[in-house]
Image (cartoon, rainbow, N blue to C red; front, side, top):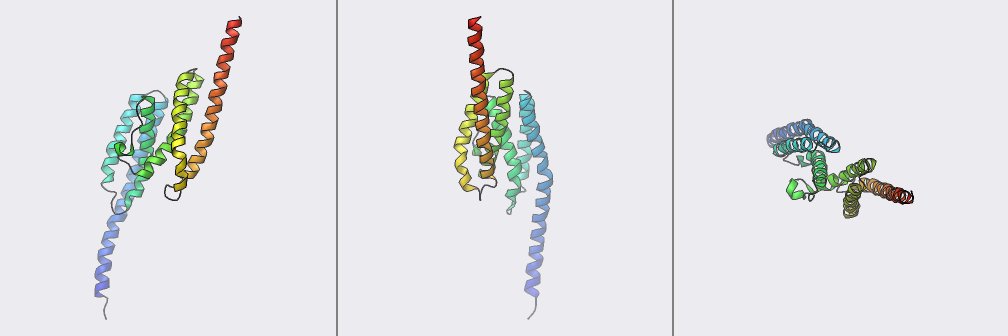
Length: 203
């Protein structure tokens, strides 16, 4: 009995695993650029620099499509985080532009990435609502809150899939608190506005 077959098999497997490991390291290193671009896109949108935000998102999309070709042999999971960030930025831009939020198919992302990206977008919408309230744009704040609340309502059942969609339940629990906080803030602001109008009439 010899180990001829074993050695042949192990050599072949070693080469295959080497390729997979190189691809993994490549993805981990290079997808950080996508995450950074998406973060810059979101920051630009909050600053009112929509075109800059869209340009950053476009660059992220190009890189994402490029790196997907490397994500083979079970390496797709390393694209979840960059795709998640991409979905978050793309949805935020759509909401600001008063367009339909794009589908997972339109964005060409995995289902898990899409769900997590939408959940993260809820947090960005809270920030946007408070920015609108601060400058007295209560109608805009209300419009964005309605979208925020509807997103949460459509996503909260995904806590059932927490074992499949990592951190879904935690993010949904956080979003429930965010939605309640924003609802309270908008209600308070509307009451304040009504009080001011009433006092002005009395003067």
